[in-house]
Image 1 (cartoon, rainbow, N blue to C red):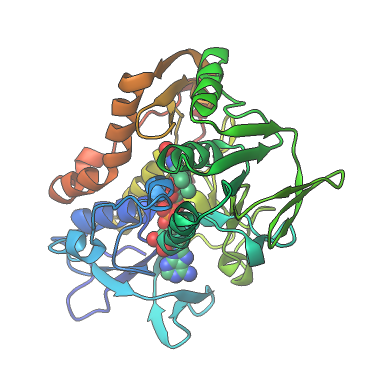
Image 2: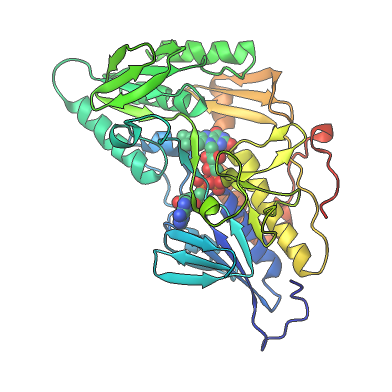
Length: 406
Ligand SMILES: Cc1cc2nc3c(=O)[nH]c(=O)nc-3n(C[C@H](O)[C@H](O)[C@H](O)COP(=O)(O)OP(=O)(O)OC[C@H]3O[C@@H](n4cnc5c(N)ncnc54)[C@H](O)[C@@H]3O)c2cc1C
């Protein structure tokens, strides 16, 4: 793997990065910046679309709000990384190839897998046929169309059910209720909204949902989605003109099909340096990776995903220079949650993601949340100019102290 001594006549070391989401972009910009002036390393980024998907804002897209046009190939310009637009359909770790749109084949020496995850639609019957999701910008736009049509309809107040009372469900229910006061919004879930937050933050979430007129139903287990509503465990049905499914996360079966070791949710199991435990030439980052820290396996967030991308890039760079990669260490520090455009709550956390007592609410929290949500793109821009600027994140103290990667 040592690319130091490669001359221009030798084949370059090919690094292929799959997915230009929050984690993949961090890996791409960071790695391209570090190997830019070195011969013998070629970085290629593959993504389904040229436009960067601001996944953290998809509940805004779903309510018809226009987002900035952020172009992945434009951001990569000048970094030396090549952009390939296409849908990855297969990875073959034996041949070290990636198949795109079933036709094109890319060869790699090192692969970075950052294809993220989508809403968990396969566990409950009817979700795939009848529910909307926030899995992609296109899915969110479909919901936006539906909500606009419901809002313009005549007659009784249409009902939108948001299934799943996790943070995506909370943000979506609040956003829909604020943007479409002419709709009934029902938030259904097993747990109280903001269940993992401190009592103060949780109370603020509940008060905001009440103020926006969201009807919250806790202890509700949706067992089926129907064309015109949902069925709950126990047999009760709730009529709905649209159902948004936010419950659970599903990982693409590509990694499992490729024979990479995955966990029970299909995420690639990594070692401390973020390499696949079964195929060390494959690095896994972001939501698609099962990364163990002292507090357990990391859960999918942008705050953790971007550091995984940066770390994979640093590890690849070290290995290419003949050095050992360092272990990845990360501790959570906050959970910012929007409650429409005019309110938010920011729960500060310990490195293991348990809530601290301190939280922000109201306008201060709105400003904080917006700063955080808007920050990835300018961060990539800064990393492009100064790769070292993106290499710092909270390490999580005693929670993430691990032995060195081998
Ligand atoms: C509404 C909402 C709000 C959120 N709010 C927050 C928040 O406030 N804070 C936070 O930390 N996290 C938040 N999250 C979670 C966060 O968005 C994810 O954890 C993050 O996007 C994961 O980054 P990633 O790079 O792993 O995957 P993604 O950002 O999903 O990127 C994956 C990329 O791979 C592409 N891709 C996927 N499959 C293929 C394929 N087969 N071929 C080609 N390309 C493919 C996708 O198009 C995408 O560009 C939120 C999520 C949602 C839905």
